[in-house]
Image 1 (tube, rainbow over the protein chains, first blue to last red):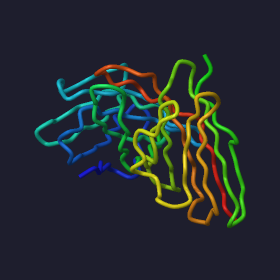
Image 2: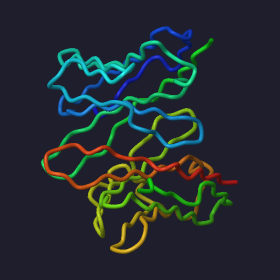
Image 3: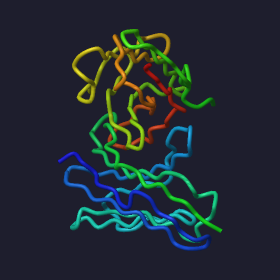
Amino acid sequence: QQQVKQSPQSLIVQKGGISIINCAYENTAFDYFPWYQQFPGKGPALLIAIRPDVSEKKEGRFTISFNKSAKQFSLHIMDSQPGDSATYFCAASIVPFFGNEKLTFGTGTRLTIIP
Amino acid sequence: NAGVMQNPRHLVRRRGQEARLRCSPMKGHSHVYWYRQLPEEGLKFMVYLQKENIIDESGMPKERFSAEFPKEGPSILRIQQVVRGDSAAYFCASSPPSLRLYNEQFFGPGTRLTVL
């Protein structure tokens, strides 16, 4: 019940295209859903995050779509650029009253943007 | 404001030796998390600590692994009698304390442990 399932495992998109990565979760107690970007040899960095009280959040070229009833959320990268080539992880967590909670990560999507 | 610092960045140990991984959180952050990333896999939670307290160690293997975050100094993840299966990247993250808000976890660059 703690799993977060992520697909696809790898994705190749042409420059300028839209990259879409999907995640699904089981635990209905999750109420914080971030996406992390990781470059080779580096630690993950927060890209964008959403709480379940909204169905969509947009920051620049990055958009999270959230479907609470389906327990699914996705990352859309518009106008994909070669610099977006990285591994992307979705994650989920519970927001406690005080402090924080562990992140449960998906298995990652290796995105490659080709010219 | 320096980010989360981890050292060493690369660590090579022979089977049976001890590995000590260090993490200095960002300034003002009192919460530290350790995650392990096996090759071609996502990050798996290991332990969540606050100063001098272990809050959640549900992801820690029962044997050989321990973690601490003393009042002074960095957080330490200690692996005793390492085996080849311990080879992985170990990431530390930190966050500030909060009340009913979720604070971003900032990740360090990781320590890549190789067990020969």
